[in-house]
Structure formats: structure tokens, C-alpha cells
Length: 460
Ligand code: UDP
Picture (cartoon, helix red, strand yellow):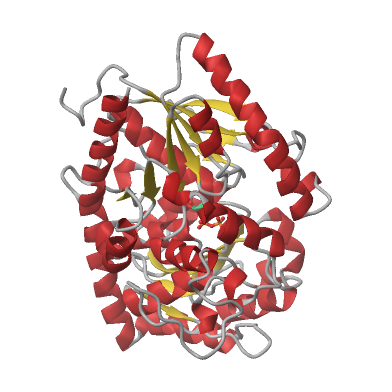
């Protein structure tokens, strides 16, 4: 069989995603890649998430649900993060078993579960049915390696000293580490899930897939590959932005907020090449009101055109009358088609919270970044953007943890007009090329996906 061409289905994979936009996007995209290479895929998430998502008609991937115990509202309806995760861990595995049983009698038996590393109990479900259990990491290999070291007790916590040295990674300042590790008290429930739970059984999985690409994280990938059967399979952007092997694959397909696409693209079309500052903090981050204010005035003071995504739940923090005062220069919307925006020729730079998907998207589309990390893995991603990829600047925070308007404005101007901006733009072009090559036929990630599919078929 020639892999890489659309063929009749050879194996059936359940792809189980944690219910968050930043997990659904890469796992859905990976599902499309498997489907393209002849594997039947059913994407699975929680019923509460299923009820929220807007689905693009172009997505051909079947969607099924399990329960997190909060079928109405998900985490937002739980008493606490801990209560949500406890209930999810009780109810999730049983409902996943029921789903597999339903599929096995429906004439479409399951051969493999590709599970989000945040939901490690899915490995036991795969084993119960004698299926392949494959873990999918949605964070960078650098972050995974740091958390793995912490879980195994190889990284002593709380952190002491000035510098952290780990194999395959550059020296990190403590504040460049993921927030759960740098500040142990910040989110204890997430620490248990992201650090302890995620890596306790990773060495037992049949394969470990990671949404990154070899050329981006060579040293740490080589190091982790000695421990795990690791395959880098990213960046997981829709194919039309990269290798174009999947015809018409232009959008992820599931969105938890409805994008205001028309207004946004129309506005961008009227802007000059490389002139717009795009600002977004992703689907989850909540900024301090003071931070929001500093950002607003930085945008105004910069005198640049800006497109600012502020989710409805964050709108109350926008300074009074700011949209009216800046309407000639700025457009503010609740959600946008981020890929289309980043790929637009008017794009100048991206002020980002450095979520891993946003980072990979900007890198793949060659957009320089102003890094303003907020929590979880974002500070480590920011370090990569600035020091390893050298395709952005991190706007420094003051002792209160607030990034002041002068710092943001300086980074924006430096990128759009300054000397450093020239080098940053050159590097951005290089990373764009490397990302595309990784996913193109014969590229590092494409080869890894083919090998994975071949293993899946031979297992069946
Ligand atoms: N996104 C989008 N429209 C927006 C803002 C974000 O489509 O207005 C998408 C973005 O392209 C990315 C995802 O939402 O794929 C956010 O994931 P990321 O890992 O960057 O951040 P998170 O939301 O998990 O913090």
C-alpha cells in the first residue's frame, strides 16, 4: 500500500482530547493527518465541550463524547478545579470503556487509543481491550522534559539557586520554568495533573507523539527519544498553511467561540503590508485589569494599527471609552480566525501569551512575536521564542508582575521599525521554511506520521 494517498481505512483510532481549545486543535489536526493516510479516526472529547463547539462544515472527522461528570458547563460549573478533575477522573474512564464497547459491537472496532497526556487513565482503558495505547503531548518537548524531571524527582523542588540545567536544554532562569514548577503554590490541582499525573506512566505507552518538530527542539528530542518511543508530528496547523498535502484543509474545524471573521478580514485587507499589531491571549488566560490597561495604552501610544482579541469574559477590564478613542487605529473583537489573521500580509507582529499552539502558528507563518507569558508553559515558550528561535522579544514585567506600557511599546517598535526587527524578521522567515519542510512529504514529522501509521496497521 502506498501510504500518503487517500486509501480505504485500515485501522480505527480513537483520539481522546482534554476539553480545551489548545488541545482540541492539535488533536483534530493530527486526526486529519491519520485519516489522510488511511486510518479511520473518531475524535473524542467531553459532552460538555461538545455542546459548546462551533463546527466548521469542512471537518470530516467523526466526533464522539465521554463524560467529565459535568455535562452541563464542564469545569465552569464545578466548585473548584480540584473537584472538576476528581469527578472527571471518576466518570471519564468508565464512559470511555462504554464508548469503546459501543464501537466494538457496531461493526467499527477500535484498534488504538491516542490519548491526551492530560488524561493518562486512558492507557488503562486501552490495555483492558488489548489495544495500542499512544500518548499525545500538546506541549513542547522542552516543557515535557522539565515536567518529567520534576515528576521523577530529578529536578529538586522547590527550585533553589539561579540557574536550572537539564540535559538537552539551555540553562533556564527559574522564572523561565513552567509556572506550576516555578511557583508550586499557584495551582496545586494543575500541578498534580500536568506534572505528576501526566508523566507517571508515560514510559508504558506504546508510542509518545508530540506536537513539535525535530528541527525546532533537536537536542531535547534526541534526549527524550532515549527514554520513550517518541515521535515528533507537528506543527499541527491545517495543511493548506504548510505542505498542502490535504486538499482544502484551511481551518481547524472546531471552535469554542464564534469568530468574527468577516469584519476582521475586511479590516485587515485595508491595511498595508507588515503594518498591523495583532494581540491575543488565547482561550483561557485572564489578565489583571491593571495589565489590560497598560496594554491598551501601549497600543495607543505606539501609533500602530492594532487588532486586539478580547474574549467576552475579559471585556469589562478594557479601559473606559478606549475602543471609541482608538477606533481609527484599532479593531477590537471577541474571537478571530487566528490562522487567517497571522497569514495575512498586513501582519506586522503578534503580541502573544505564548500558548504552544499560538507559538507554533506564528513560527509556521513567519510572524515575529512580542512575548507576554501569563502562566503554565508560556514562560518556557517565551524563552524559546526570544533566545532559541530569536524571532521575538519578551516584554519584561516589573516586580509586581505587570508589563508596563513603555516595555510593550518598545518591543512593538523595535520589531516593526528597529535594527533588531530586521534580524527577527529574517529568523522568522527561516523558521517558517523549516516548519513547512517538517510537514511536507518526506519531512521529519511527515515521516514519523507514516511510520506510526505503518506500526498501527501491522499491529492490527
Ligand atoms: N485562537 C483563535 N482565535 C482567537 C484566539 C485564538 O482561533 O481569537 C486559537 C489559536 O489559533 C490557537 C488556540 O486558539 O490554536 C489557542 O491555543 P494556545 O495553545 O495558543 O493557547 P490557550 O488557549 O491554550 O491558552
